[in-house]
Amino acid sequence: MNKITSPEPMSETPLLEMRGISKSFPGVKALNDVNISLFPGKVTALIGENGAGKSTLVKILTGIYASEEGEIQVDGKPVAFANAQDAMDFGVTAIHQETVLFDELSVAENIFLGHAPKTRLGLVNWKAVNARALALLHSLESNIDPRVRLKDLSIAQRHLVAIARALSVDARIVIMDEPTAALSRKEVDDLFQIVKRLKAQGKAILFISHKFDEVYEIADHYAVFRDGKAVGSGALAGVGQDEIVKLMVGRSIEHAFPKVDIPLGETVLSVENYTHPTEFRDINFALRKGEIFGIYGLVGAGRSEICQSLFGVTRPSGGSLKLDGREIAIHSPSDAIKAGIVYVPEERGRHGAVLQLPIYQNISLPSLTRTSRLGLLRAAEEFALARKYAERFDLRAAALSVPVGTLSGGNQQKVVIGKWLATQPKILILDEPTKGIDIGSKAAVHAFISELASEGLSIIMVSSELPEILGMSDRVLVMREGLSAGIFERSHLNAETLVRAATGNA
Image 1 (spheres, rainbow, N blue to C red):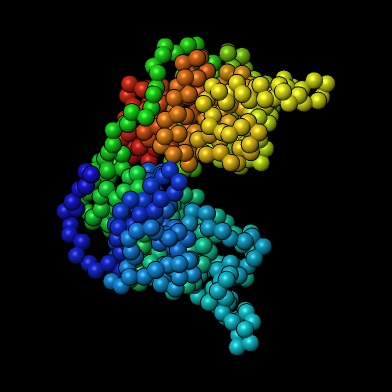
Image 2: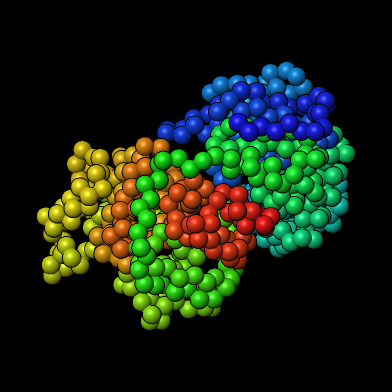
């Protein structure tokens, strides 16, 4: 398993231990016999690429999911979290990257929502709510007025309110899930001062981050997850970034990626200095005929946002696009479709398909002008069009008239891709094409992606899965914090290079 032994023994007694934790979802083993320990007055960094199982572990630890195997111990005694309230009762609290707060409520109301102090008559004790909120904010060295509405605060101040909310229960174990994603360096420094105060109070902290510089600055211990397994843990002192990166990505590319290497054709799409007001800046790349162009990066790096802009969902603020050498302007998805650019979104159930409609209507939906006469739909032509792509992709369904929502994830993805191929595009954009798909169906999706490229279709593929990016891409654009961190040729692709570029540890 390539586990490494820390040079510093971890002799402390854990405040919380998770032993032999396993959790499965349909087609996916999210966690497989994992162990992790959290120590009083220490920060444990949980590290792993997207899909490694970090979020599942947090949800089990906060009572949202129940594990199928293993146990959780607090102070050496087994505990069971049937729900989130149980976890809070044992002192487990979480600060998420996107904590749900309410703009129209006051700071104090947000902090104590759901567990406000009451009077003897059972009414909310507003004097106590405001006083306790003020005391919490002062403990975080914040001068925010607890009576102001949340919408009047800055992003950093909102983050402090989220931290205060997490600490408003009697927290002993604090989970920080990507807490610095939206913060400036000054705000990160302020947050780390809060973390140090929490350590001094003896709280055990689980710190989840993709940023190695922050991990090494604040963490005492580390745990690395890969593919749902714990592959290394220990004291962080003396363990180099190289060793952590190898643990994160230390696997060979499986034979699940039937990439066909073909000579690439002429440039189809040129993206020059492409910029969005808030999501990405100065992106440059050229897409060639028959190419699978991968885009890799951490969550929030701007990958999907580039694709959505190319498809006209959002508008850029600068730069240009050239299709077959001619400059084009895309202001809407209809403009993109007319130009021959189509987009399969990450959330196929919400944005890619109409789950209640039958297969044949989903596939024909973008091609209604071909399946109608004088404004009237012709069911026979819709069926014929749908049958063509259902047969091509070996769609497994009882009939073309069944709702898409009744299909497996892999077959739903085939429907979404089929509907766009029916428009006969030049460029197919795939955002996380195998997300939520079982292993067997992934291979089938990869097979027809490769087949489409070999037929001359140009493909842009966003993926969080390193094996998929490495196994399918001709070239890879790595994104980091809205900027290009480099474009890598297939001959120079390897997991460590991409992870270093994505995390800023090149």
